[in-house]
Amino acid sequence: MLKGYVPPYNATVVQKLLDKGAVLMGKTNLDEFAMGSGSTDGVFGPVKNPWSYSKQYREKRKQKAHGENEDSNWLITGGSSGGSAAAVAAFTCFAALGSDTGGSTRNPAAHCGVVGFKPSYGLVSRHGLIPLVNSMDVPGILTRCVDDAAIVLGMLAGHDPKDSTTIQDPVKPFTLPTFADVNKLCIGIPKEYLAPELSSEVRSFWSKAANLFESEGAKVIEVSLPHTSYSIVCYHVLCTSEVASNMARFDGLEYGHRCDINVSTEAMYAATRREGFNDVVRGRILSGNFFLLKENYENYFIKAQKVRRLIANDFVNVFNSGVDVLLTPTTLSEAVPYLEFIKEDNRTRSAQDDIFTQAVNMAGLPAVSVPVALSNQGLPIGLQFIGRAFCDQQLLKIAKWFE
Ligand code: GLN
Image 1 (spheres, rainbow, N blue to C red):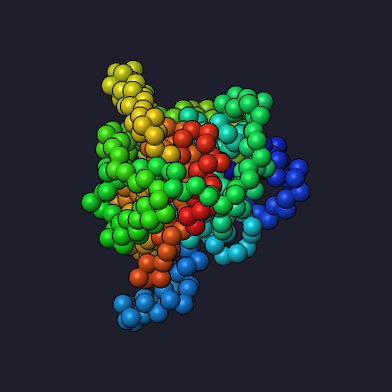
Image 2 (cartoon, rainbow, N blue to C red):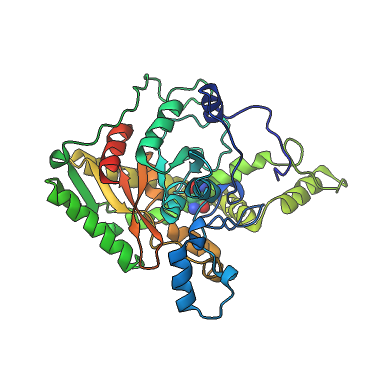
């Protein structure tokens, strides 16, 4: 839909970087309209994970699948901001921006072995970011270490008159001393995040990380986020509903692509949208319009908003009980080969991959994925820290100590 489209203005985050003297090297690939968890559904083709070409992984694959065409088993980056994660992982840039509506910065960061930071909702301007779900979207930051993420956040954070959801209070500079008082911390481990689909390796790194904090004197406790099991469904009702509304602007008149059909305006709209959107986007528009139908609105959209509040309150309750940060996995497993990823029903897979990340967006909290270790296959695994709203600095401090 937006092929060849040149926006007439810069997003606030881009302008802020340019004003500070940053050099913009290019735009990165992603799933169409940031809908996905694999970066396999982009207009420019799928994004390949640079780790596919690491010596260790190649050797393991050779042992495993003898005779298999070497180039056919490259790994996905995760997504949707997979191009940004790959660019940082491949050392082509200092930092990259992505977006995070349900995990799209943290998920590829975990799969590509980089840091993926989702700021608190309202800390960084969304002006110029193409909306997916306005009430959850935030620009995300991908870097190789937590310090670098803090540097970029320091440049981007703060009020923007062009985004009424940004905070009014002045933002203090982000400086990250190494956390000295780990022994004063209380780390929460949400028991509902022990999903049956979680790979045993991720699970074991998760508990090793908890033990590390404990051995340094932190209090590590099991906590409950009781509405977790509703969160994927709730996210999808809200996401598709907002998508249905947001995508209405792409009608062939205002932006990008326009089809050749000119028998009527209606026919032009329909054909433009059929040609211009992939089936993931079209599917979400259709689902969203279904949830927003007069007869469904109360039962789906309004109900989901209420469930969203319960999910957000789960986090508030845990933080009010004295927990400083939550420690969770970022993804269910390490990156999987492309052919494996597309074998399953892509959309189900995509939804499952957000299991640990999207509740955070519904609650507007800051979260960061930090690489912890390499798996047996030699692939990166990430863990996620979730902080209190607008305690981004404290969150990054803890993540820095841990990395
Ligand atoms: N995977 C989620 C989705 O497809 C999240 C996307 C995102 O964060 N941009 O909705």
